[in-house]
Image (cartoon, rainbow, N blue to C red; front, side, top):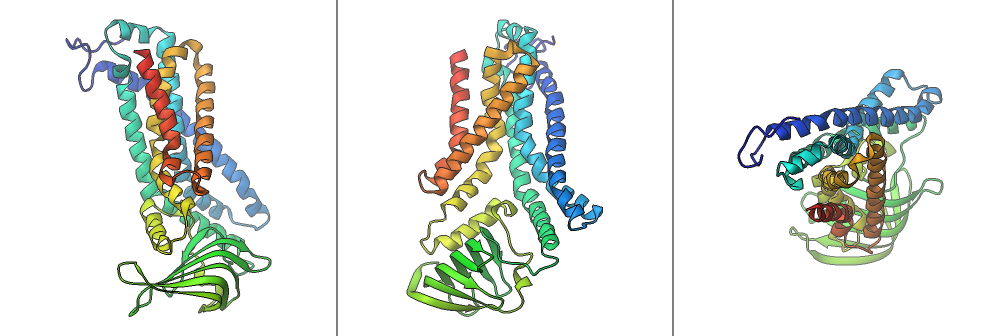
Length: 370
């Protein structure tokens, strides 16, 4: 096994031969996991697209475009999994061959041994965040619009639920629930910005929609000043909202939170929070866009100390342990998100709870190992 390069400080330099050796041991399973998980998830998505090919007669070239648009989001999803998988397999191999024991006998602490892996986890987390902000939302939007065009090629596009969109008159819309059969709306929020006047925020509990107008019921119209403060408020039982143009006016403008960057989602949240309405589910998603990329660092922090206890279990044990950790992490994150969206937890805590629990457990195991 390579040594630390003969440094008199026990290998505590910024980058030693030992660091390079540990990182190199991790790179192969890391890249293998990215490729493997990407192929599996992309194949599952391709299986879902087969209905479009055989029922809608969608050309193969269109399916390839959909796969290309989906690829960035799949790769970003596999990065934290690949980091955990590689950490457990690499350190597990070193533990099984007694190389971790030799490092300890050479005077290296556990935290120093995993330092290069922690740095790699931070780098992968940064790459994940950058991709989620600059690449993935745009590709998701293109994919969703292409699917919408395919689905609605025989019928005009309809209003979708839990989607933000903007019309040609520079009005921002959000509809919580939509009943397409009855053409009924629930949880309606509309932010109007008209030249020469103050913006208006219209909220309504229910409504009905047609081709050229919406009929809103049981709502409030708030007039805002240029700083966003409410300067006037009027309640209404019924209100008719005229819409110009054809139903296709919203087509291509609709966006889910997955199709928006963190900055863009934050701007929409600011618009609608001015009404005093609770939009906790969007606030949780806003914070998750920063919290989830840190899963790579958290997985290294938790996976590395576990290898010191169970590393001799072999490769298969590392695979099983990584799957268990991933499952528990994403289940905990999903439960916390649900609690935050329903107001049972503060949105910021709900988004970061998984990282705090699993990262704290990793720090605890690392401290106990000392």
